[in-house]
Length: 342
Image (cartoon, rainbow, N blue to C red; front, side, top):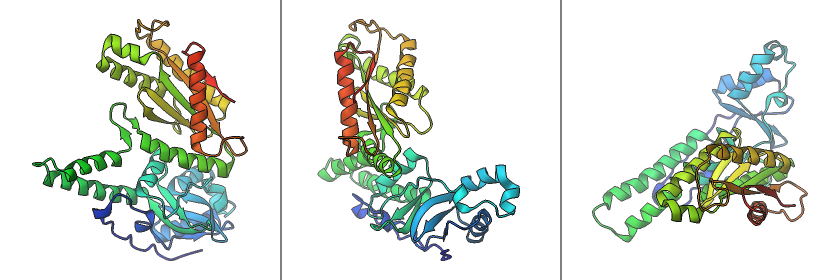
């Protein structure tokens, strides 16, 4: 076990805030335990060092993470067993481990924290060994410092429309993870989330699926009812999709009227069932769309799946391309349907 107290965080200098590597804000000297440690050891160390998590490590390589939530969940069901030291650290740790590299960026980590709903991210070196830890509060603090820097720059230059002012505005937009109209993830956040979800799926040999939705005859809807009505339709479609989403699912605006649903731990058959439930909710709204042959607002969708061993799926972009092909097939087949592509 490493019993070193965590070192202080390095300060973040936002002057060159285009990219902040996690090594600049990570905590080193992370407290760890071996796999043979007991749950009582975990509780004792977390109390002694006032920790919110402990990493379980074997030969320098992390196997899983134990957070306060894991302790509470285990205590609720196994208080007596914990006192008897019959439950080990490996029995309560969370796996697969969601990790990043110290060379990854602050924005990458913020997307992972938001999408994976975790508060602690171990940082692994090229050899897979644990080198540090970042927490949600570390990331939020660093992000606010950077955001504040650009906000100060805007305030200082508000009276003159200079090139620096426009550049600062552009950087503020890039620092956002949310698409403003639909209040879901934007394209940049989607690409980062897809990248890390794909890597995790390949390591754990668990499938994940992507559904690409497109509003049928959306241009004709805008021409008939106006662009402001078109914006409201996109918002309605988004809400309908969200009603059937699970806690682990994420929505992103891919571009225009295309919305992508990222479904972790979901094979293609499960993705098809979930996508059809999503579109059924929209059908219940029965929103008029006179230019459509269906007479109401509908969506089409295509599904792509990533998992270790699937031919022609090397990166997350292959999965998105597969979903895009399924969407094209749905459109050719009459729209208002979801299609799988092998």
